[in-house]
Image 1 (spheres, one colour):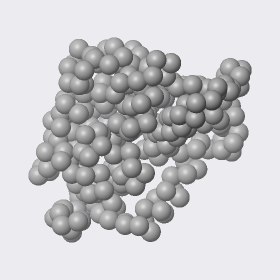
Image 2 (tube, one colour):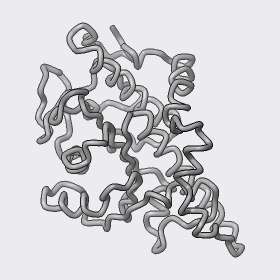
Image 3 (cartoon, one colour):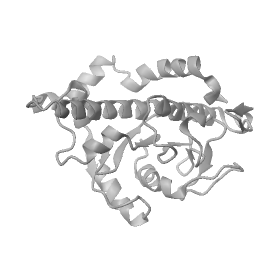
Image 4 (cartoon, helix red, strand yellow):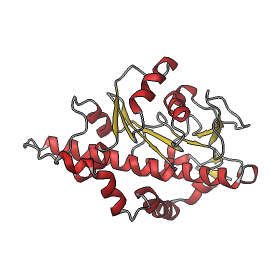
Amino acid sequence: MSVQGLDIRSRKGEVSDAEWKTRVDLAAAYRLVALFKWDDLVFTHITARVPGSDNEFLINPYGMMFDEITASNLVKIDTAGNKLDDSPYPVNPAGFTIHSAIHAVRHDAQCVLHTHTLNGIAVSAQKHGVLPISQHSIFVLSSLAYHDYEGVALRDDEKPRLVRDLGDKTYLMLRNHGLLTVGGSVGDAWLNMYMFETVCNIQVRAMAGGSELTKVDPTIIESAQAQAKQATNGVGAGALTWPGLLRRLDRIDPSYRT
């Protein structure tokens, strides 16, 4: 098969049905990140745990643009970032540093998504971080953690501090760096990032207006998770929106499924 001039060997018959579904969802997440303009050329990553495994993960081929990712060209790696298949594509072991740390301790995290968006980094550089100034923000603030910047994430000795700071939270603001979300599915992690990015966009625009900001009552934030469950009929926002997002991709370019 060929995607944007790239020759890709199909792996559909080589992996389990569960892994193939995860591959399709992960490829879709990469395409959607590109579609929503959250990508930073090739310099961030989304990873997913291979179903049924504690030490096998899927990651993008290093050097490919996010709108070139397909289910078949995703690369299977171990906890150290070593390739576990015969993929002809390289991976970026350093890019897996943050992800491997989180996957190792957060077994509920099927997917870890990290971005370097302009507004995300802008808010990460602000001393007070995310402000309670929008309806979107209450859901992020109800499960938000911060990690101070320690330079490019290349060193293993940063991992304990990273996982300590994340704890059991869903959203992690990497100070002066970017945004990170986890999810029990690829769709959940993507929808969480949509919420996180939206919060940052709203905050940058609101602060640029120059007027005094109105803050949400803290008691409302305390009940945000219960409100979210009620608003999504108990199924969760990720499960509710993911099928529609896939349909949108299918209308634009279904090659992520190959």
